[in-house]
Length: 343
Image (cartoon, rainbow, N blue to C red):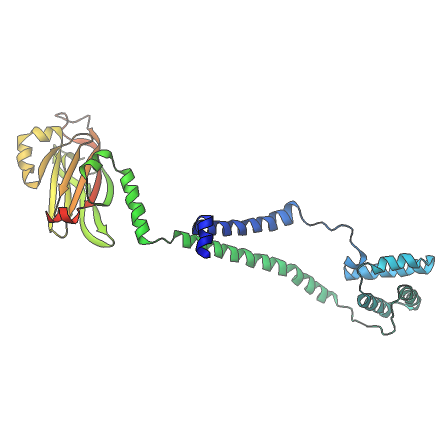
């Protein structure tokens, strides 16, 4: 039955939303509308709806009026509307206990007119002002305490529902994360990575003046460490500060292969300079820095595609294109398929 209901309303999220919306609407209707915008207004109330103190004053005034005018039908009409006989008898008895002799006679005449006996008067002690004040304070505090507890309960329920909505299975989070990465990567990188499970998507930038640039990223899957990748300064030229970077190293470390693959991204000047070529050759394969170029590195199990998304040479570079003003890499790491890794 529950599954059918969930299917009809569109799932658990919709059900939770309906519950929260109902509770919020209830609070808004109760406090905002019921107390502020359109509060309840009493209209056409009967004497029985009066406060007990005012009931006594009304009955005494009615007894005085009856003694003067003798209109029994009016007295019966006023005291018969929703007024229980026992309650009226108790009220008249209390009034007789508090009244003088003349007032007692008028009250007895009123009781005979409406057919109420006052032969056994009930004497009740008049509460002290302190007791009335205490009762009034408690009566005012109880609704406020109830409203406060209700608000706390609603907030607690809303927090619980929010946590339930946010609590998702690791598989769902992994699928969503993979989908976001696939949407974010550029078509050039996607073309360089035809197979494999994407493990990470990183963006890193070097700017002139960052003499300690060396950024690395951990590669993991389901909490298992597989390796690292990153970009760092490979070679500088001229005199500093700041250091004038003419080459950067893009590297990939595979824990299972226990080795690091590196490619050296060189400026236009360094790529044609034979001395720098010879110096940097042992560090990795040379690659000319070009806008939108995709550089790939592979190990036994991992593959990384690094695209140069931003390339800017320093205007003060001598010779031209000898060191970078700014360069940005977009890195996407993937895990090779089992068959591809074995090959």
